[in-house]
Image (tube, rainbow, N blue to C red; front, side):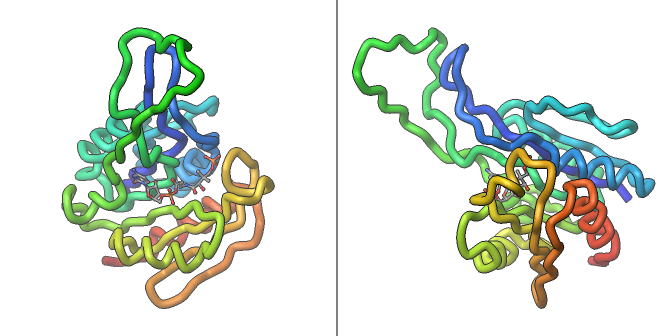
Amino acid sequence: MKFLITAGPTREALDPARYITNRSSGRMGYALAGAAKHDGHEVILISGPTALDVPAGVDFIHVESAQEMYEAVRDMVKYADVAILCAAVADYRPVAYSEQKIKKDGERLIIELERTPDILGSMRDVFGFTGTLIGFAAETQNVEDYARGKLERKKCDFIVANDVSRSDIGFDSRENEVALVFPDHTEYLEKDTKEHIAMHIIEHATIIRR
Ligand code: PMT
């Protein structure tokens, strides 16, 4: 099977020196790419900036912004049987990019932000993707309920939900603890390394038949 996996954060530039980003290390997404490759699948990994090595044998596309990730996914999704969107895509970006470094000439600086394109939400209705679709949900409360809402709205086969209010799992940690939220049930995976969690997710992804 062919997997398309997104990973890492995006960077939304304010000026040549500054950007808005988040704490994603890319580990969860890279672990998914490594696990899928290990199981003999072809993998396209589309990633924002990270400090990680790309798993051997994986096709790699580096992006910076949410817009670039959107365009890379749009262009590559036709090759995929399974798409797993694990990236922590910025939800907002600066409305204006300053070509010059913004000067600190006031006590306050107000930055206007606008929504970025919703990549997961575009998969079915805009990109026409008919393969297996797996989204992530990074929540700090009502984790399973919010994930179930995303599952329905984004037309996913399942959602991998994690609690990002905890420092021992989720963002920038070596381990994770997730709930796999399916339309008719939820499966809880105990806290484990991201590599082991990834193996379970890939296993589930390959047995779904659409
Ligand atoms: O990278 P690590 O340090 O290993 O951390 C892993 C992780 C915490 C980043 C990962 O486990 C995780 O939760 N990834 C999803 C992060 C996220 O942005 O969640 P969300 O609930 O805001 O978004 C829901 C889904 O929509 C995600 O599949 C996301 O990729 C997608 N999305 C979000 C915004 C956007 N503009 N387009 C999208 O496609």
